[in-house]
Image (cartoon, rainbow, N blue to C red; front, side, top):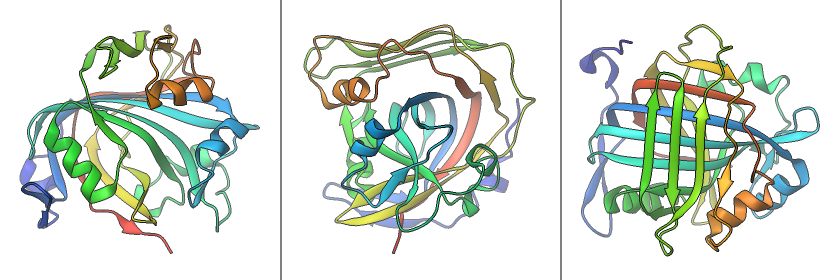
Length: 263
């Protein structure tokens, strides 16, 4: 699988953002990584409660909301290697209408998206990734151990509870054999709320990825964990549930742009 040469892809000029400790260049460039994005159908009212204090509403697709559990293995980035897992809800701004045919809508250029993923938990494995995420975008990050393995269609991802030092959530199994051909439009939009302002953040991705249907493993959550991520997974009804689909690629590169306010 080939990505574009770096000089052809990383063309957005960077600007320096001063953090409480050090600086970071925006967009943050990710030169080599792999990922697996798992999609779950969840109760709409449960998802709605998670976004109640935000400017966003969950997308409703056949009466359900979509939650995403996104695993990333960043092997080479401008801020060093690290792993990350996002728990998010597919949504749209409350002051607008939900786009027609959302599943088709998100296969187009992300710059034109009217939807995005509102991030409710985003564990990472390094302090600099935590600091940049919190101070630039107010991503709900925490630092912990994260395991990631993607070999062909075999996947295993584990987020550890930072207090218990035990697995908080585990997703392991085989990605479904039935899939799309390799697709190009992998860029996406994420949403957060920073200092009271809703943000729309573009992540520009270069890869060839597949959307596979089904996954053999279920979402396992540690019954002893009191962490907010464990509670969010329980509240959304994801415990013991299998994802309906997976978007995945073993090799990609991306630019994480600064957030733009939504008015």
